[in-house]
Image 1 (cartoon, one colour):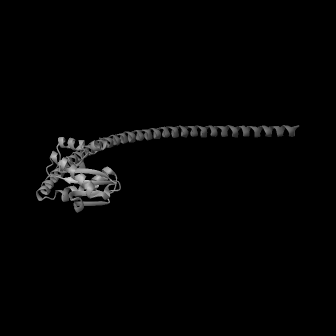
Image 2 (cartoon, rainbow, N blue to C red):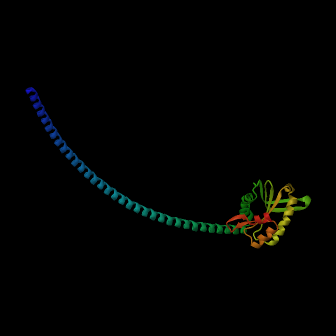
Length: 253
């Protein structure tokens, strides 16, 4: 019994020591937890402060970026307005240049025409160079033969004729008469020439005859008269380029 009591006493002593150790361990653990919580609080506060600083920096950067973007947009607007103004000035200058060039071209054509008239080379220098491109444009066929100052005499017919220009394509034969100062009676003379042409050049009888009266310019009344007689007129259009002035009026009439 005494041995049992001694064992129980030892057991109680061991239990007391264990409790004391557990108490000390818990006290130590509570201290560590308190330290851990303090560290976590400090870390959270430090994190909040760093986040606040980061947000402040981002706000400042955004404001600075907005300011720079505003300045950039203002610079771009100014540059665009400046560019638009320069483009407008350039277009105005080009417009003035084109007008000057057109006026110079018109004046040059007038002077060239007057010179050709004086020298008697109106057909060779003005009308003939324009004939081929103009008729090919309007009639849509290539000129395969072209003669300038064409003369022909047929003794058996006791007939002769002189024609300023004769041009031939697949479907047409073009006969051009040129006068430096066109008058109404010249149209009648030209129609008589066309009758002689048919007799002098029977080889072109299967082609449609296209009469063209040419000069540097024509009055409106002359254009109307020629159109009524189905005669095409070749002249400068407002002194800019040689053209058929009454193509639609004759073709549709």
